[in-house]
Length: 406
Image: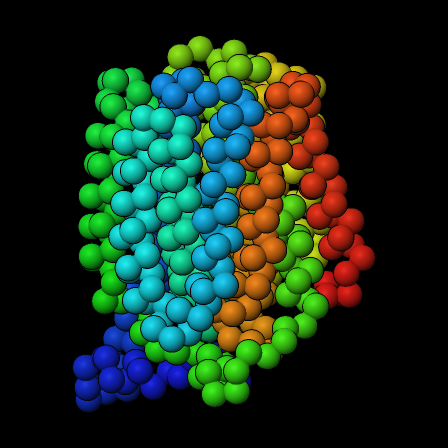
């Protein structure tokens, strides 16, 4: 049974005389929906990448140690987790399109507040708000992604997340340019905020504004206990997001303090990671279709570990850049695959399934970046990256043993 009711298309598309013309108009409108959803993934990625590109600068400006930064970064996933009990319910009640528009606006406001921080507690408070609305955006946009996959009857989640990753590359490149011209953090963030709001304004009308059939059923019958498969998908996402969170928050610091990258090249590690993650996501849908989710996830976990271990063994500019590229390839297909599988679960609504998987997965963001800071404080930042590399091994072992992938 399809997730959504296709009849809304007949209400939107103009009445035409010939069936062929209607089919062409329908396909054109469907393509515009796909572009709208992709661009909103891009806008969200741009918002996050803009903050990530400035972490080393903000760390230095606020005179924070590794341990202090690790503790402050803890505020972002705390905000995300606090929002999780409510995000699925809000999407069910008001629709993913409305929740996405409102939460993206406040997500951008949260980003600007990070640029205004002059004390450590200011930054922590800003990250909490940033994480809170970031989670609402995440559930809403991925719900739109699942709906769009259903309209096209094929896997698209990898390309959607690829748009998010592509935005990470663009955000890193813009950050590099801003640093080169000595543009302040606040001005940098305000410029990107205007761009993201333009993306939202131009694409909001093309979001899918109907509820899925299982969301309507869930509202009538109440919450249905999900099967254990959703929890295990969340655990796989946890391991991947722990690795992603470390790369987002600490790759610049690693290149500055361990690799000793000169000047603006501190962003090189983050940029190489994001480029390969984006590339992997755009080709991931075809690879999963050809080789299956199980094989791709097993390979992905192994590549994550190899990349992080090599970065520890060879902490030099070129080898470490190549290692971070491997990590980008490794993480590229894990989260899109997990979310796509979760969205097809029939026991609960799309938004509720995504909330369950995200709740477990985002514990990786909660644990990864602060753990890096604490381990680095006690030993070395280099060894803390090696510790996170073990999560990739766990992904491979877990996928190999789960009945879900047989």
